[in-house]
Length: 144
Ligand code: DQA
Image (cartoon, rainbow, N blue to C red; front, top):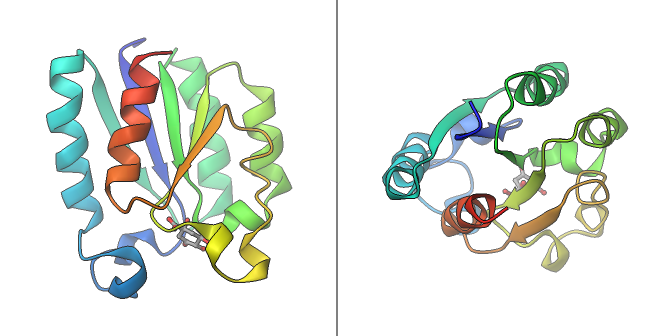
């Protein structure tokens, strides 16, 4: 499954499209999945898109990505980005490259969003481009 890219989404991202659209845009997670599939096809990649509001699910899926020999993980951990040492450790624990993704640019927002436990373990970060952040992260994954 080295051609599979896991795209893991954390809490509240199931509400994308109606959640604070002035910050996160009007695309739903399904819209983003469609954009990623369209871009993945010519790159010879398959996208496995998931969302959970539960931290442990995200940890389990990071482990699974390595067990299934995924090419990379795109991880938008939502608010867990700023709180989760468990996600930090899980990213460190696997060899699969993890790319941190955000729709908004957390550095231009509340101070509590300025620290990223995910970003301190990830290969790199793409943030601030709305749904395009995911597509840019997929392009990066294809070149790893
Ligand atoms: C987010 C940024 C986080 O600070 C926030 O908690 C989210 C979404 C983003 O994609 O911009 O839930 O990860």
